[in-house]
Length: 142
Image 1: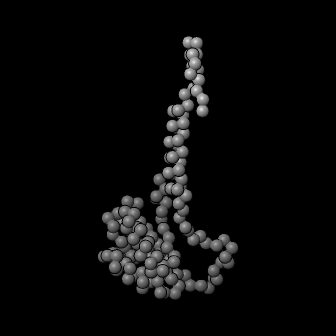
Image 2: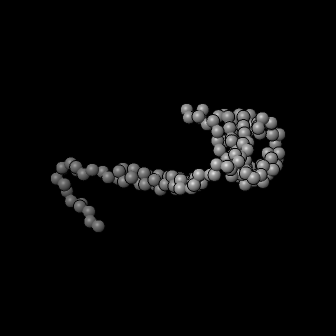
Image 3: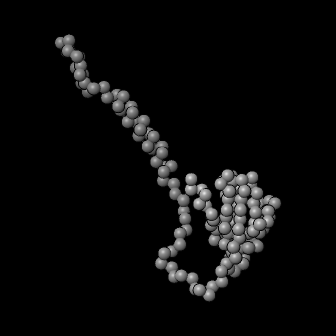
């Protein structure tokens, strides 16, 4: 490494100072490294097979369970209020053994807490309910 120490003859130095540029680039690189793992997270979805044959027409239609979740945390199963999660869990256990298994149509209020909706979906999944879907979610578009 060498350095010029001599007299410049009173001339001004016209070289650009690159130290702030390097500092900014290092900060941007660190931010990229920190945010990159966040962007790679994915949610696994079991999508229907587009090449699967359609179901036979004589197959009986499954029963439909309408689950409504209100903003105050109230859970309503086909018009009847569920008092607690233990009752909901027992209802899912009873319905999961039916053949064909019922479809769960979930209707959360737009102001319903996420943890209540997640607990209902987790209870259905733990009891091996296969057909779970959100219904009437057009109001969430705005």
